Amino acid sequence: MGEFISKHTFDVTERSAFVNHLIDDIKALEILLQKNLFEDDVVRIGAEQELCLVDGNHSPKSLNLELLKKIDDSHFTTELASYNMEINLDPFELKGDCFSKVEAQLQELLHKGTAEAEKLKVKLVLAGILPTIGKNEVSMDYLTPIPRYFALNEALTACKGGDFNLKIRGVDELSLRHNTVMFEACNTSFQLHLQIPSYDFIPSYNWSQAIAGPVLSVCCNSPMLMGRELWKETRIALFQQSLDTRKTSYALRDQTPRVGYGDYWEKGSVAEIFKADISKHRVLLTKPIKEGSLEQLKKGQIPKLEALCLHNGTVYRWNRPCYGIGGGKPHLRIENRYIPSGPSVIDEMANFAFWIGLMKGRPKEFDAMESQMNFKAAKTNFIKAARTGKESIFVWKDQQVTAKKLVVRELLPIAYDGLQKCKVAPKDIERLLGIIEARARGYTGAQWQVKNYRLLLKKLKTNEAVRQMTKAMQHNQQLGLPVHEWPMIDEKSDFSPSKFELVEEIMSTRLLKLHESDYANMALAIMRWNNIHHIPVENDKGELSGLLTWSYIESLSSARDLASAKVSDIMVTDVKTINPRTTIETAKKMMRDHGIGCLPVCVGNTMVGIISNRDL
Image 1 (tube, helix red, strand yellow):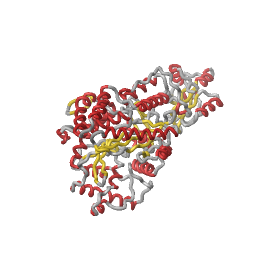
Image 2: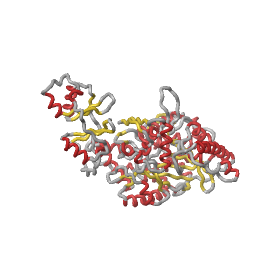
Image 3: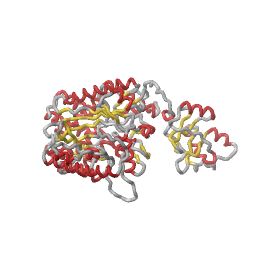
Image 4: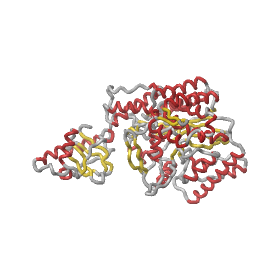
């Protein structure tokens, strides 16, 4: 959020004062607009690089504070999860070799971070969603222990008034409840900033909304979450649902999500956007403010609009309007928040140049967006892009067009024109936009991950498949190749096995289950058909209540008629269980000591997996 909050409890007096400052900040902003005090004669670009920390097994490594201390560079900062970090790049004026400068600085900082990370046996990975993140890594144990993150979690969970519900359906499905905002930490982005003249802010903002879907379609890099193949850019659904404070009820009512694309083309000035967000979203965080913005204006000072900026940091538009001060002058920016981290630095720079070129090359007819495109069509394009990526079919100028055709024939020429108008170095234009065209004709990061994951699953279990894929991603990033040149993982390779320590890393999760009321003869048939010797049994609440084992059934078969028996009559009820974080050595000992061939893996009374002699 870019704000340092020194505590995570706020009293009524501070909250009341903060709200007054928030109202005054809008008044001050309108005065700045009326007096044309914004820096409108310079255009600068900037970016924020989020990244993941992994261990030797390419699993998330909770070490960001220790690593930041070793790096000792103000460009690096924390993120919500302790296995994430962020690099804040310097702003550069949009001209000449600005993209080469951004790229050089990013490479230099990544090299610096990598050098220190190696001393801690940690690696840096660029990934929209790290494939190896598991359920354990979204617990509060992995929240970076800094007051502002505790404050954000407490404020959002209090606003929600209950658990957050996640339900994302793609090829696979993720459906669960969660009681913290930590699922948001799965998302890592490459956030782009573009300074916008105050007089052109609304046309620029609406144009940024219109192009969001097509731009995202060729930048997708987050198709996986917890071993499930979901959307091509799963971050879009995950981020909205992980911070969704809307209340559910039996009544049908409209509620604006805190994370979203928007509901209409904007009008007026940037102040109207901020007013709408304040009107629709409760104040979550406050802080003491020494001097109000109107008082600063009276003294001839440029106000920081601290209350407005803090509140704006808790409203998560995919294209976010931003206010800032540089060199003593106020400016406005659009922050592009939907571009994922990775697949490689050169891919990110290509995405950056493509978006900036499109923004600066906006055709004249799109100044009045409502005359060119229905807002719902643009919003539908964005959702399609998140779901199906480069395989999407968009509506553009009332015509249906494939993502590839729209990008190559319509948008790339606009981007070339925009960068040329800004006098960006021709070699950078050709180099970076050439990558976008090659990716549009080839494959995106999401497509590369999906294809390789499916290949790996032919030979490996889920946990090992995501590890090997993450390993290949990190290796290709180190080589500096754009993703359309990444080789496919050879499924015939002899993969060196990872060093597993915990049950959750090797347990089977796709399980056949029985209900207590099922008939025994059907259970026996299922076991024969699937060549399995153990099936867990659940009750009406979905809780583990017993285990059906072939050896136990054989001991009963001569003593009773199984044809009419229920599963509850023949199951073992004294079942030994373990949790996902149990060590493999402990599981081995339990199975050996009790003379059993499997152990159900449970969280509470809910079964999430099973480990057998075959797994060991």
